[in-house]
Image: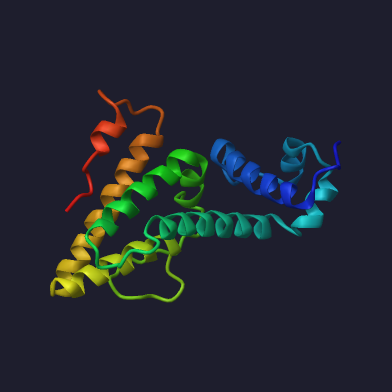
Length: 191
């Protein structure tokens, strides 16, 4: 086994391979020993990084959530949250993130992911970070345009649902489109 991995490279490889394996085989079939084989390291190398399967899965959730949240935040960096263009920037960034990382989608949105997501226009401590980016923008627009909060919530759920649905279509290899996604997405989120 190759034990010459730099610690940081191995950390990322362990996380990415875990996500890949869970998408392919399911969480029940996943083991740290199988992960070690897939990464071509000893099982002791895996245990030096993660004491348990639960610890590794928790770190995978954090890894995907932080990476995804940073991507969404970067897409609107320097913009005012009440700018109408913010919603489209976030929508496109959301889709692009999962096009580049399709295994992250299956991992974070599977029923075993322990995703904590409450669809609300109000801030909720510990709510899913990527959704929080959507929520803040929608709340700012609701305030700017003096919409009733229940209308703001409906718009938030609608926007988030559309982006979720389109993303699931794009990354699902069994779903075909008569045309290109670039053509379909052009102007999709414009006000």
